[in-house]
Structure formats: structure tokens, C-alpha cells
Amino acid sequence: MTNMEQQTPVSPPAWSFDLKPNRAWVRLIMPTVLPIFKGWRVVIYPNDHHPPHVHVIGAGEHARFELFCDLGQVRLLSNIGFGLGQLKRVEAYLLNHLARLCSEWGRIHGHH
Image (cartoon, rainbow, N blue to C red; front, side):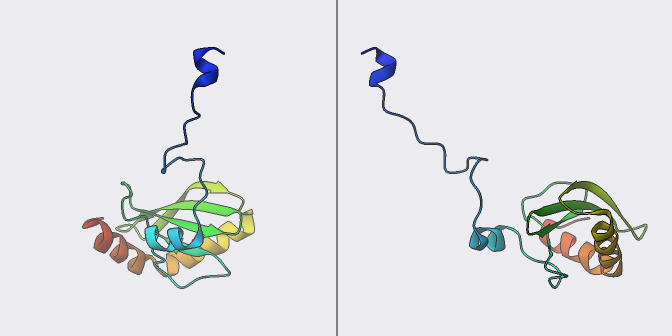
């Protein structure tokens, strides 16, 4: 046997990006900032970065929208799985609650 064959396999780190978060972890790390809408959660990561934005998460769907708090607008940053009609409904929902979303971003991050 060579040295490579004798080595014990190494486990992946606990925070491996290949790990799928469970529901309890998602709720702890990403607080829902609006009521669930059509089965989609609107969340903000507490350790997230600028620009101000929210994540909209559903079953197999994930989109990020930037919040333009001073302009009263949102902009799609990324999308996985949402159809065009769904994105338009999500955008309208976010716009209707933009003041609250901006307030929550400021509360969680201390600024917006």
C-alpha cells in the first residue's frame, strides 16, 4: 500500500457549501421579514452585504431583489426557478411592502 491508500478520508468541514440547510437552520439564519406570500418567504440574511436586498425563497425557487429605498423601487438581481409571471407578482408584493423591507434591513444591518 502507498501512503495515499493508508490515509484516513477527511470529512468535509461543517460549513461546506455542498450541505443543504434544513428548515430550522433556514428560519434561524434567515428571518422572514414579511408574511409568507403564495408559499414564498421574503428573508434577509443577518450577515449579508450591501446593497440592501431581500431573498425570496420557495420550493425550488430563489430570487434576490435589490431595495432602492430612497427611490421606491426594487430590481431583480438573480433568479433560479421563478417564472416571469411569478417574478412580476413578487416584485409587486415587494413594492407594496418596500417601506417595511427597508426598515427591516436597517434594523438588522444598522443602515440602508
